[in-house]
Amino acid sequence: MSDFFQSVVDWQLMHGRHGLPWQGSRDPYRVWLSEIMLQQTQVSTVLAYYPRFLERFPTLHALAAAPESAVMTLWSGLGYYSRARHLHRCAQVVVAEWDGQFPRTAAELQQLPGIGPSTAAAIAAFCFGERVSIMDGNVQRVLSRWLAFDQDLAQASSVKTLWALAQALIPPAATHPQMIAYTQGLMDLGATLCRRTKPHCLTCPLQPSCQAFEQDRTAALPVKRRTLKRRTEAWWFLVLRRPDGHLWLEPRPSTGIWAGLYTFPLLDGAEQARKPPHGVESLAPVWHEPIAHDLTHRALQLHLVEWAVTHDHDRAGGCWVDPRGDMDLGLPAPLRSWIRQRAQGL
Image (cartoon, rainbow, N blue to C red; front, side, top):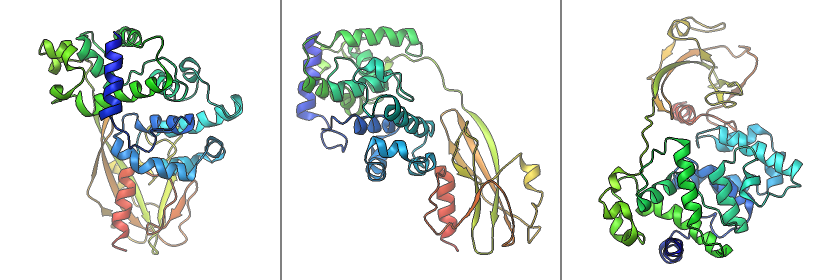
């Protein structure tokens, strides 16, 4: 079993990724931040957010002391916004309950908000050299193929079994530098060679001992039978524009889709969208082209109905923003993009 471990370590040191901004650091804050950002998000996307986030919040204490709205603003466009709220809460917990120092074991790290088992293992391995295996989607794929593990990974019991097998692959005497290379190597293999489709088996260091390759079953593994059911929803937004071009935005509820982010007021449906709101200058709204936006479990059709209002139009619970300015608010990516495009015409 140790041959697997050493093969991954050797390959990573020679051929793995080494230029990512969070690599080479044993600072738990920086590693934790990168791991949270990388959850269900491409590296190329995270590369644009990671340095900006560190510039604004260079330390754990800076993040913990910041208002949640500032965190959500910087996270805007990265998606899966519950990660940002958990990130902020986790920083506050570590400062308040752990004297500003992350716990050093995966078991303890898992007790913190927003840190699951695989993320906890990554932090513990990278920063503290704990001999524990990660188990994100890429790693599940690498191990399932190498072991020809054909249990359904949609089942928690199957993931638990695979994780036990993964843990057995780590030598008891593995050093901290080896754990860094091994953990990064598993990630790199899954991202660059052992891909979901068209894997590069002939250049993979595990190919000589890979049971899925030997059995010609790489396309069939890993097994994950649960199918994603995505429903389509139509959301109707009230766009209020003053004569000076300012738009009215208000925060979403603290739970649900885009929780805590700023959006246009949400209407009950098309019928309400046809009714002129109080204070309009014209009874003829502008019906904008719908915006299609896909989430993990939902396909959204965003309908924006724009009404012109007077300068003294008064509302509560939100704020007027200049679309030509910085809009220093947390906004969902499709609405931020739409507002910027509209601002070009003002």
